Image (cartoon, rainbow, N blue to C red; front, side, top):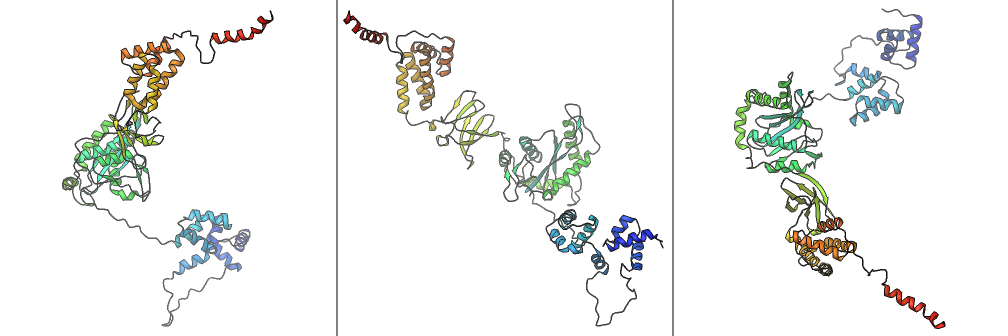
Length: 506
């Protein structure tokens, strides 16, 4: 039995009178709880120890059902008991012991330890085991995709880095496709899907990805937004994306396990190039991964894949043609600008924003609300224009004809130039005619006539041709006519009128 000094006894008794628990006193003083309890009982601060003589209950006395005496005793001694209502309410909200302890300290002046709160919360919550359900899918129905980390590989700078590891796993047979890449993007993510489909010889009806940005524009439980390019690629192969719920990766547990399985095969290895690692993955998948006996199905993966292969959707005859997406404003002349070229949109969309899909050989104009195709044009060069005849007005507006006649008064070459522009562009020639009138104001009709003669000989019906020629060959002509300054005859008459009186006096 430990013998305490007078000072130690007084310290223990003083702390007990302050309401400290035996655990807290043990932690602060270093004395055992049995010694602290004995000291308190001897001084009368703690109640005497209850008798331990067992009593045999009679037939009329029944023990209280489901009562653990040790737990009841511990709960009654816990410093958290006065705060039971607060702790139970916070625990029902899903708060952990750390958050509950912080709330007790800040709002209730709690002075005891975090461990006491943790023990109290642990007894409040039942320990239920989580039950997981295995998802078995029909053949050809679903595939799961995700990214992981590959083995260290030497990059272009000579350093070893871990590339991204793409894995697609078929839901029924567990056959998989694995490949590493350095940098991911929307197009790279979609191209990996295409390579996986070609590896399997077909596509599944559903692809289940995670909510990564390459595939999912906006994650949502009920209405996830799929990226336009990713959705178009999957539609080309006859399948749709079915993303997992946010923070629920266990819904694609098959590919999660496959990534870990591939990473274990790569453990401890280093590769000098990304192609070397992909070649190793292809050999390993064919030699070992496909011939293994799967732990869940207890069957060979390759044998199960041969059963699933006929149920895969056949591949289309051509691969998907990738495109860029963007937004453009339809200008007042009905055109949008893409890479320096101009493409005509329906006249009703003037002044609004439209979605543009930019391919290698074509440009598609899409309605941003209904996502319907408005116009499709072949790609043209910078400065060139594409227009559909149906979008042209049925007849040339009268103001265009007036501008043609006005320019024709400057000379026959100017008239030829104006008629050629009007025949080629119709109502769209208005801006060109305004530019021609401005050139006449700056350089004069004679210079403009010479520029139009040169344009007619070169068949260059462009305002820029006239402007460039006149800028390099300016020949302003002197004239007695000016729209503001009157002619010399006006000043002569005025001078004669002013001097008429002087002659009469002489």
